[in-house]
Length: 221
Ligand SMILES: N[C@@H](CCC(=O)N[C@@H](CS)C(=O)NCC(=O)O)C(=O)O
Image 1: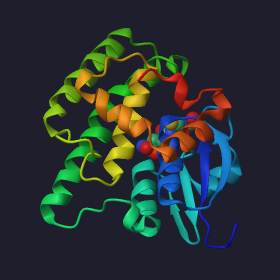
Image 2: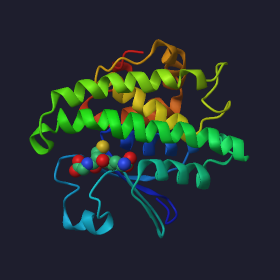
Image 3: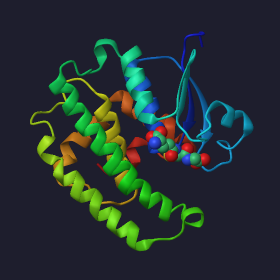
């Protein structure tokens, strides 16, 4: 790695997938510190000094240190994406991108999928809450349904022919939903298939989930 190559901390979750996929789309050589969620590796003094949130993913690029998957993907596309990726240019384009990203991060990720994780897999830490999990599942499908009208009419990425930050966030949440057996509206089928055929997605998925023994071929499409 050269001095200007980025380093990513974290593998094995759909949020770490976002960082690896963005770097693969941008075609950047980078280093990985393959620490895992809930392994104790995010709790060490050394990691806490780097990222006081003690969460993954985390990206370091020279003096730039970023701890949120959304901010990481946006930074990678801005700095390394060039003409391989879509960057909104007008106010209307930025609004369309922001609308997707806010819905995905707030409604799909934080309010539904992560609620399922907290009160399902992590119930010993956060408490079992079957009713919250059922409600979250229903809410995921309702919100995903509400965004169907914004899906692209043609066989493209979400906002243009080129991949955008919103695509990385959406596809990672759709995969997360599939892994949790949450019903994903059928209208997303073609979009999921197109995204899953991208070489950068397949490469990043297999690299990110190697620690769990899962490949992109294992997910029903
Ligand atoms: N909003 C953050 C969430 C990051 C997050 O919660 N990461 C989890 C794994 S997906 C984590 O690192 N949890 C602490 C741990 O497992 O030790 C992002 O999108 O990057």
